[in-house]
Amino acid sequence: MRTSEHDHDHDHEPGREPKHGNEHEHEHRNETAYALSESRTLWELIARRADLTPERPVLLQAAADPSDDRTLTFGELRDRAERVAAGLHDMGVRPGTVVAWQLPTRIETALLSFALARIGAVQSPVIPFYRDREVGFALRESKAEYFAVPGTWRGFDHREMARRLGARGVFEAYDDLPDGDPSVLPPPPSDGTAVRWIYWTSGTTSDPKGVLHTDRSLMAGGSCLAHALHLKASDVGSMAFPFAHIAGPDYTVMLLLYGFPAVMFEHFALPAALDGYRRHGVTVAGGSTAFYSMFLTEQRKLRPGEKVIPTLRLLAGGGAPKPPEIYHAVVREMGCQLTHGYGMTEVPMITMGAPDDTAENLATTEGLPPEGMEIRVTDADGKELPPDTDGEVRLRGEAVCRGYLDPRQSADVFDADGFLITGDLGHLKKSGHLVLTGRAKDIIIRKGENISAKEIEDLLHQHPAVGDAAVVGLPDPERGERVCAVVEQHAGAGELTLETVVSYLRGEGLSTYKLPEQLELVEALPRNETLRKVLKYKLRERFSRS
Image 1 (cartoon, one colour):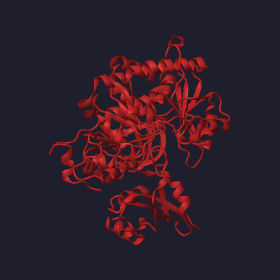
Image 2 (cartoon, rainbow, N blue to C red):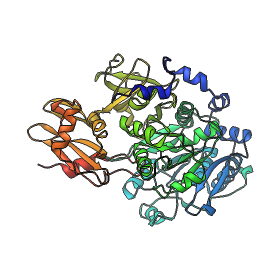
Image 3 (tube, rainbow, N blue to C red):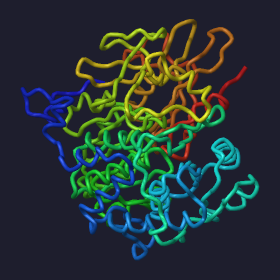
Image 4 (cartoon, rainbow, N blue to C red):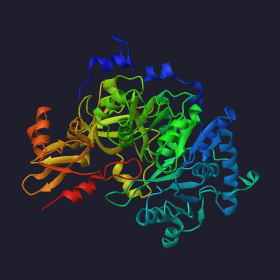
């Protein structure tokens, strides 16, 4: 979608070229944050920040009853995490011990995680919504010696599940945490390149994969996010996603580098969570594209001139494709900026949009990579392609994982030059901005022609009756695959038909061979519980027919 001159004027002075890459960094560089980003380990970063601003808040726990809200300062984070580390040490946790934890987004969860970082244990976070299949797989594959659970949380007994799975060293870590005398602890770890984190891919079509990270790879991802957003100590962020997601350390590193707090939501749901955003004066919110849409829905319930979060100046996130129309709707209706990035469990942050970039770049690209992140776009044989040419996205840099727990999986995902083969398709602009055009597995092959699902989805999102949309390829005996559009409609919108959708897409210039041959209207697209990504495999299962 083209942007108007007005859109561009909103972002920079007429006649003046927008800044890119290092020019952004030079103008907005925070010397303290850049110095802290050189910390060797996550614990060293925590300790250095606590020395600088011990009394400043870092975590704000939002409760249903405002009188139950809690605050943790940077100094308390360091001191209490050391006491928890000592308690874990008394239990038998040592450097290299594998500890799995499945906990909600709470101050106690952060304390436990940082305590394990203080010891130098290997931690394996598990999303709290996962159940026996995924949790059992993670426990078996990681050979976890301890497993921290919340007890019964949101009606589900995690301790009983742990018993069914035969988990070892099970302990509860919801309100109460292990406690001890820090004098028993060995020195903090000093090698930030050792593998101390095992994160799990979603495993929506097969078993999850254990992704190996180091302190430095997680810190590199968080630094990319922090430096791109030009944040200030006066900002207030928010964690509406599971802390056990790879975004947990991403976001925490940002708080530590720039010295500002974030509001934690144990269970995120709108409109209930809005009171927490408002009373804590959140200035930076987000999560993923689905979160942007949820905030827009709440904004549209208000009278003209009212803001859903009065203090909000920036929505930021990643983890799922962002249609250009979502960007323009947020800026137009919510009166704040929207920056979107590109990351994955294997590489927590690859590129990130900067708030002072042009509207065109923020709407249509995933932003710029940080210094040290190499992006190579190749053909199927690994040959590098020139700018503005679509191909496969490959990555190399400090933020890239060290491979998978199963070494056989690692052999298939890294090329001969050490680049991670992402499976994503896109191109680099001459400015260095990355444009994603789809997934290699999300290309629909109809009568031998490749069709990008994302191209059709981006057009559908511009239709006034469409709330959200997903396009999938379904098996077809004549065509190989046929194009199926699955649509959520806005409340009160007239019911769409295949004929009206096809007519609209033709009018937008979509080639005939890409037009949908099947339309399905649904109340809600199926999504995962972390960043609310659409589960396309469920749509294929539901709507395929022989």
